[in-house]
Length: 289
Image 1 (cartoon, rainbow, N blue to C red):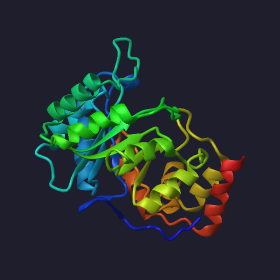
Image 2: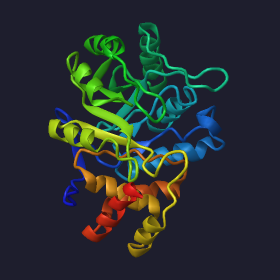
Image 3: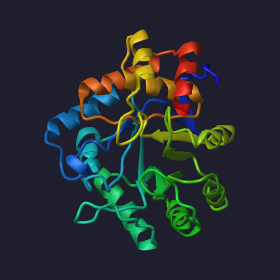
Image 4: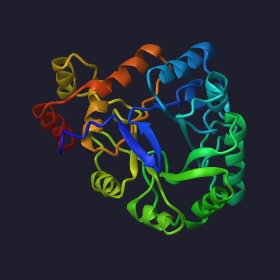
């Protein structure tokens, strides 16, 4: 694995350039990604500090809350900085029991686009990801119909660029036969490496790869080797995991989420870490343990 890909920016599409360390806004809610945060003022402060620290890529969705996160983003940042890219996603909704049912019909997707536009205070969405699979794994199915709906909405000027979340390489190929795809958002990290080949294929095509669960998923990775690497570089395990992703491939964009100002600063500082080859080798071995 190369350790030289440390460019701080990535050309997402055309003249749309983003800093590789962005911010994932999902945690700006109450427990279970439901309802408002316990401290809305701190949530707004986190969003504003992210921009102050150079973040120009925010990942969100109107089903976070639902509606809560997008409304907070609007309250904190509107009118938005000219270089800010807000990436949202559709393909799910929230049930009254706080479930996450899939929502891939034409009516569902269209309503979700308008919900995102309204709550973010935008006339056009920068990037919209179609969420296809379950929480952690893709599903093997055709996505032509829902992606076609998104492509139609793009042609109407409601969306600038399209992406995919929780998908397979075959689903990317299918989507590309309908409209261009600028980013893939899949489960990938130090130990969840099933998408190694997919990531490299996306890099070859200039498609951004945006990992979620950067430190192992719902149960954070507990590893003595990871902790040793962190201690050696006077960093946190999360910073090491993020730095490893940045060095893994130049097309990786990070969207670590937090509701804490201190953790926000730590996450963004991960971009300044350079992992030497010996540590890269040690971390790569975690996937085989």
